[in-house]
Length: 148
Length: 148
DNA sequence: GGTTGTCACTTCGCATGCGAAATACCCTAG
DNA sequence: CTAGGGTATTTCGCATGCGAAGTGACAACC
Image (cartoon, rainbow over all chains, first blue to last red):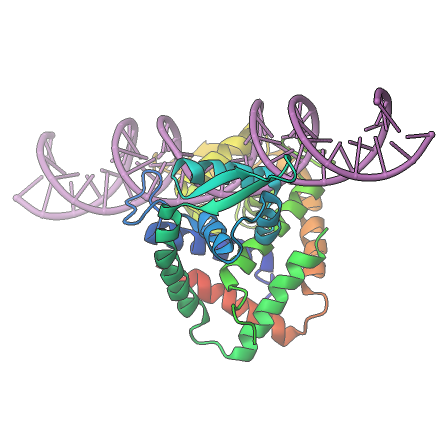
């Protein structure tokens, strides 16, 4: 009976920002941030995890995995390369394509990233049943898939 | 039985970006964008709606309503003022406080914003029961509230 | 085998957003 | 009334992200 239902859009936006802030405060610290960790924010963490599972992935693959735009990923990778987390490498068979690998630094950061995500996931799922979480997942995927 | 569950964090991020893109394409068009509408993006829409319900709100109130940071809202308002959507006004009783009102342009944009949000909400809720959506809302609020 | 279209990525300009520090102002204790 | 502390906002530097336009490289067709 809420006269104005608390629009899902705004709730989602708020939740996303909250998660990003949490990750940034835990691992990140790029800017003015106190940053106890190694300057890795949420998107960079996603790249690291993808590269851990798919070494030598192309930028296009990472773009698809993160549901981002090529331009955004390009910029993100530039910063990550500056921080020596990943390395760009030319594809021998197609010179348009850029392949990515983790550096030693990136690999070393993986453990922390995984731990941070595990902890975040615990907090996110706390107090919800498996079924409820499945519903949430299904809804989020629905949103991602059905908007033009 | 997914070995690696599709982390809720990434799903949420992807969903949020998708919604933002949708709104920007429909109403926005600020940058290079084709932008059929009036340069109003998702956050600006939130401000307009809040001001419609709470005329003369302070920046702090808007900040709380959007779950954003004061700094972010300050910048957003600067852009919206540049676009003549809102107006800043000094509070007579407390000169630290800034009060906000919709301009004629802002008020005129409201109808479109509401229509856009209604359409978006329809798409977002399509195919989900009331109970399921309640679960999703509850989860999103849980995330917003329980992360430090 | 050269033109033409497509593909992968980068660059550019801008919007959004945060944390820290600065600014300006209010209030209360002394 | 003045010092000190708390509050509201802005400013600054940076990260993230998108769309449009550019670049270089493949591919497909004549």
